[in-house]
Image 1 (cartoon, helix red, strand yellow):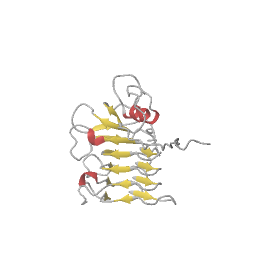
Image 2 (cartoon, helix red, strand yellow):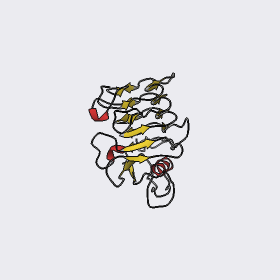
Image 3 (cartoon, helix red, strand yellow):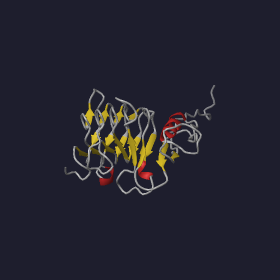
Image 4 (tube, helix red, strand yellow):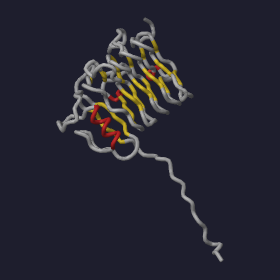
Amino acid sequence: MSDPRRTRLTVEPLECRCVPTVITVTGVRDSTARDGVVTLREAILAANTHHAVGDAPAPAPGPVTIKFNIPGGGLHTIRPWSGLPTLNGGVTIDATSQPGYTGTPLIQLDGSAAGSNTDALTLLGGHNTVRGLLIDRWGGRGIVIASDNNVLTGDWVGVDETGYRAAGNGQDGIVVAGSSNLIGDVYPGDRMVISGNRLAGIDVSGARTTGNLIISNYIGTDANGFA
């Protein structure tokens, strides 16, 4: 006979409440060498693999935030020689963290040296965020959202650093092929500027593109919403 005083406990897995690890980009190079500078390529690779890459430290398990602290004022241009690594889930690129940011992007991803048909950023795995970047002159698409529950805010895609001249990407500015993604927001600082691209500003297509919210952006205008 079983003992009625004994009970069997069941344990449900807890949702992760991990504090995001921060990796800080400190230079505009496009290398993975041990040279004392953390590059964006190193930071993305470390965030994806949770291993040290070049000068980027190995982040703890869980979400990873990539911030910027590149010396000097004004615009900082990162000009990759090939496509950047995909964001494989739970990765935030926060270019608004660059000192001096007041609403105009200070971190530029210039794709002019990356080759034809190369996309700037591809979001896989879901729950990625890209905030405050200037993305222009890529041969392919500016941002490809190929997963769910991602956020884009405050990015300029297809214009130059002034926000008034076209510097378009060779195909679409943004492609959405997932669900429940947010592009822009009601706050002015979260607005996207998407103009000057060769094809669509935002292309949303496919059977899985449900529940996406695209709100309060300037699409096809300058950074002030006029020209």
